[in-house]
Image (cartoon, rainbow, N blue to C red; front, side, top):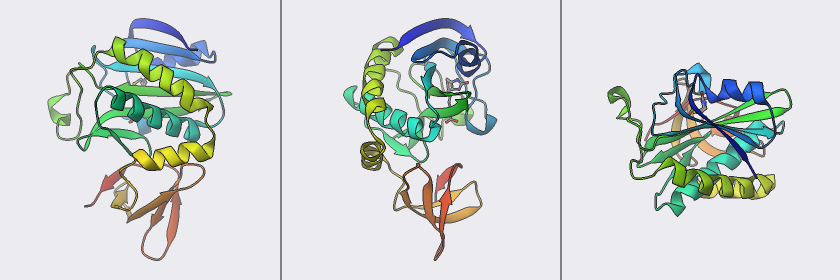
Length: 214
Ligand code: BTN
């Protein structure tokens, strides 16, 4: 069971989480003034979206983010939305990013940051690559997601990897990672690292920004 701490406006739920640091607490904010994504990127978080950090006592951010991705796809499916996972943990709808997931290790905790575009506006300059789900209300979606997340968190690595593979749209495709390393995304390994076949060589990639080439 999660305890939800609801804030109207925060800098970033990740920052609040660092101060609270209690297992199974969810920091939920109506808006973030300084929301951030992976690699320190800006994450637009105006009212209407789901912006939260789930605090979990764990030292496995990689595995937790895989679990959260699977939970997100399943919860969206329950709402009638077909979503897919793009490695490492972007959730896409119609090929555009609807949700970003950030797993940060902090002391003995994982701060699982989740940003899901719902009724919030998408800035003009991001509309080519990002999408929202204006028909889904945050307060209806949140309990559903947390219920599914709770179940996924209890599963073992093998089951999660199997589910992740079922819902992903990355493997088997030609990709470029961080705009420098090209190859075919072959698989993910036990730790969620991407196995990239660069033409003879198989590279194991822990993190990066992936773009599909075809
Ligand atoms: C990504 O870059 O794809 C990850 C985006 C994570 C955004 C969420 S919104 C709630 C939490 N607070 C933040 O500042 N970031 C995460």
